Length: 452
Ligand code: PA5
Image (cartoon, rainbow, N blue to C red; front, side, top):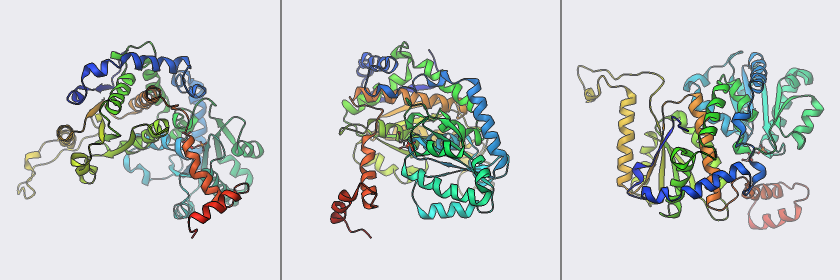
């Protein structure tokens, strides 16, 4: 099953041979099959595997209808959520919306802002200041319905909505995305009559961007969610269990990073792009890979850079620091628009050699030059070639990376679908905040640190 997204492993050959990667095919095929059969670890969280193809036109239409209502009643829509209930929507929005559209807000085309992904007092008070004179609505997203950060943000913003619009109108300005029956958010929805969408039980947070978790905020932002889902569904087909290794880019990517980790001892994978629009896509990817693989003392550490910006910060380390890393470079074939460098009579900046060239040509040469320099510096490079950044390719990339992390997590022997380590900070935070039931732990912690 061919796909227009290509994984190129050609530039890896001086680090791992094609033969070594091809030898991993049976292993990758086995784990891909496990994801489809549901006989591996965390098999109660495999709802994402066939999710794109199961989304119906009527699901999309319902989400778009709800988004339309929110768009017409608001200059700002605040999306509350953290982790998987935040990053997917943020990533796709940043990738697909015009970069400076964020500075424009009006009813019918509202600004989408985020909250509940931090506990910063300044962030929240500046958000309140910003929405003071603007009409607003809220989408609150929490699968568990109990996560502290979004719960606090929702308490504050709900209060603002209710005091500004009254309880009844406030309720019409709130849409929740949460569990079908469990959690405090579900209880609130039922009590206050908020419109709500359900996150399927068998889809974990970081795999939920193609559920209403991502699709509703994206529809509000004016993204073509049908096209996004179509892209993901095409990749679902192209990476299915029966698709052999040579045609299956999720397996190829999983095999390459497994070889670099296991055989070459690489510890860090850098997701690289020369398009700033993909900066948050990399944040989404970092959560997907970090939470899925980083456990039991194992897993590549996912990190990201946007070039050429970060060539002037992290570039030195990547070129000459500890040889810990390899790069996965998302290479974008063509830009959406055209900017050409002009010739100047005086040529004081010495740039006339670029006259007539488009910025994308300069960016491309920077990309190729960087790739060769990093390879020469001992940094293997995997390339993921996409034709252009659009809703369909982003949908494809989302599914490809999800599929690959499932395979790859199984290959290193972990359960890619849980995140037990996230609880440690929560326990300490609750203890330090004197949450009932945590008193004893709180006393112990307060002996170890000074609470200021
Ligand atoms: O991937 C995950 O499951 C987590 O990162 C969650 O998305 C994150 O902790 C937010 O959880 P919730 O949606 O329950 O508020």
